[in-house]
Image (cartoon, rainbow, N blue to C red; front, top):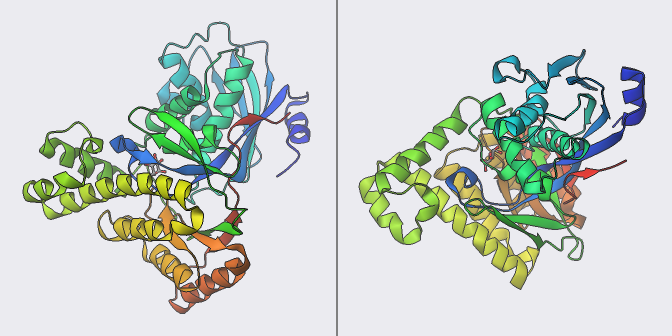
Length: 382
Ligand code: GLA
């Protein structure tokens, strides 16, 4: 990443008051469970989005980035959803969400903001949540709002839902705000209680290999919304508000009541919630070397029941496991994006090259493969 303080001065002609940053995320397990009020188990990655910010005298928000030309200007007295577009909606949308929820911004001063990021975009690693959370953390401190991390995460989600228009849950923003070094965040999306769970990857000589399929996903349109709708349809037919309320015992009844496709969508959510709980239990009892079967079962469920994987991801996961990974699964919303493999670090290079060869032999698009380290959530850097 560029030296963001220098870049800020070059852009605005004066120094920043501070720099805040927040990470992208990998979800270890628990996919499409968040908007069904279920369980998720993500961690923050060592790829971050930074916001260098200085307070202005007026109420304008000036936004620049190191990745797009020009300046976007918003005004705290005229924040409307209609006026927001492109990447700046993720930042202005957070301020809008705060104001819309009644957070008192009457005394808030305008801001000059420069954004820099090394979170890959369109890779299913939540570059958008990293941006929302870096901005939210800066707003919170500079405007003296006194919000806790989860509250900032919620405003990031509202920005995503309303300003960007994707019907997503709290997973990404909660991970970006609450992440800790070498831990996953266990979040109950119903009660919104969260706690860190130790991973102990380093102790066991393990790492997480990310394979970005370079097949780009888009959650504001298409399959993600269809899955959201199928889950709502399944819940309604079963007489519950969310799929969180049903368990494995209810599946025979669900199979009788629902069409086959909706049933398989429901079965994914129900079994995935249980896999998250099992992963938390196995991590505590036996450690990360024992969670491989759960990761692989989640991948199979996303592939066969929820049908959100793509052939590039399926092949990467199968190849990783055949080449010695402990387990592998797609991570994130699906329809492209990334998969993860839990690997012994001394086998990481061999597993990566097996994936490259398999994709190339199948005539598929080249992937970008790298390791990630579970890292700290939103923070003030300077
Ligand atoms: C995307 C969404 C999340 C979550 C995942 C699937 O990342 O932003 O809220 O639904 O997909 O688990």
